[in-house]
Amino acid sequence: MARNPVTWLGTPAFPVAAKKALTDTQLRRNLRKATTTIRGKRALAVGELPDWEDLRRAGEAIKNEVLSNLDSYLERLEQSVTARGGIVHWARDAAEANEIVLRLAKAAGADEVVKIKSMATAEIGLNEALEAGGVTAIETDLAELIVQLGKDRPSHILVPAIHRNRSEIKEIFRREMPGAPDDLTDEPRELAEAARAHLRRKFLTAKVAVSGANFAVADTGSVVVVESEGNGRMCLTLPQTLITVMGIEKLVPSWRDLEVFLQLLPRSSTAERMNPYTSVWTGVTPGDGPQEFHLVLLDNGRTATLADEVGRAALRCIRCSACLNVCPVYERTGGGAYGSVYPGPIGAILTPQLMENLQDKQTASLPFASSLCGACFDACPVRIDIPKILVHLRGKVVSAKRKRGPEAVAMSALAWVMRDPKRFAAAQRAGSLGRFVAKGGRIGRLPWPGSKWTDSRDLPVPPAESFRAWWRRTRG
Image (cartoon, rainbow, N blue to C red):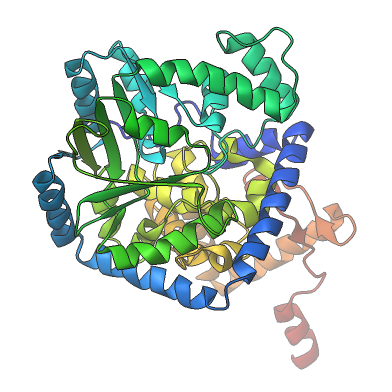
């Protein structure tokens, strides 16, 4: 199977990347301001609904039903899309999905495609695959465009350029955007107008558009995208060919089920009662919109994730980013430290499962990128118990390292010591000497291999007398 490009090549393990991110004071200011603002607005939007908890439970139940019967719902979706003039393609992994999209773009005679913001296409590295095949992908979402022009990596699921401020965006536009005014300032209105003028030319000449999907309705074959800017609407109506790449878990059974998520998603993501643009298309309509519609159904590790009774709950995710905005770890490190297109708490449980590799150092570090405070579960609109899955995945990481890691060596040594009362007593006496290197009642640094512990936490000072010695002295 081809390599799964959910993570970025060359990214160090989370502790290393996080330590570097923590030294970037501008990044931390940008993140703190943005996440604090989003949290406040979301709290107001959610507080308007007296039945919010009932909606969360309904969303959880619908998603569980879909995951329990995913095969039949996917077959129903394929039949519905095909009956309405669309063409369905099945992709086992990133390589297959990329090959399908590239082939379709070239068949349409396109050397450039316009793209709606899509986590699925970022997950498979579609832009890079298209570029290698001679096709340029143009991101039309403003934040994605900023990231693309800045040759950067997204830092947030909903707001990819959350780590950039207005002055930084102005410099990126003036340096990288064709036709950007020389006197461009950092006023939001001017920045948006410069992007609008740049993108309008792309919309009017594009033959092919590529989208993701927030939801797909199995009963009718309808595909749904929600957005705030309207650029997606331009992609969905002007080009002759529309290619949608959708994770197989994005299904809802019926329109009635969709109603639940169209209440949950906007309030949890953009803190709005409804999204400014909700686009729905069903197959092909002669003379109206794209005349070719292709739906690429992407597995890419999802079937393997579905097999895990605990971890499969991550597939309920509707990509709202609410968990990122309340996470104290994400707020201080940003998305880049996670080394994945899925940052934050949801990325810490989704990426290792999609990668199907908990022995890779970078991937294996992600389940530990959390304080387990539980704020993510409280915020999740579909009630994914992220802390529970984090602990579950941590157990898998430890099991994978048990026979080869330092923990295995340490546990073997400890077992040898504790099997003999004399060895155990001698170890206790030796351990009590640690009090001579303590400061303020704590041991902050030990030599290797003890440094593996004290690099991230202090060690309590051992008592001068062990319980065993006290018992012998006082009770004979």
